[in-house]
Length: 95
Image 1: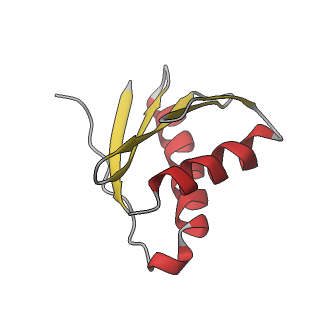
Image 2: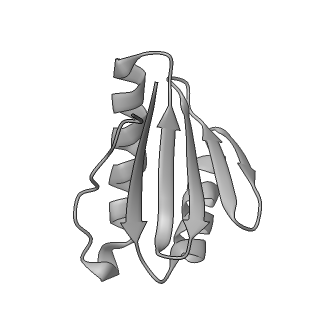
């Protein structure tokens, strides 16, 4: 199961780095210049730099796992982006 959300920002690279460093103290994180993979227990999350900002993707074997990873990733991103007065993310399921 998978879910995706876009976060519009001019600070995509900085926010991705902040998330990767924060979570890297607790879980396995793999990061490149444009993408970070964060391996949570209930599932994985990717933050990818796109022209409009960040694209977040979460995957898990269960709907509960997807929901939990989405909650953790979104709450941290909104906190890290507080200067931008962020709005809650709109998550989409693949067609």
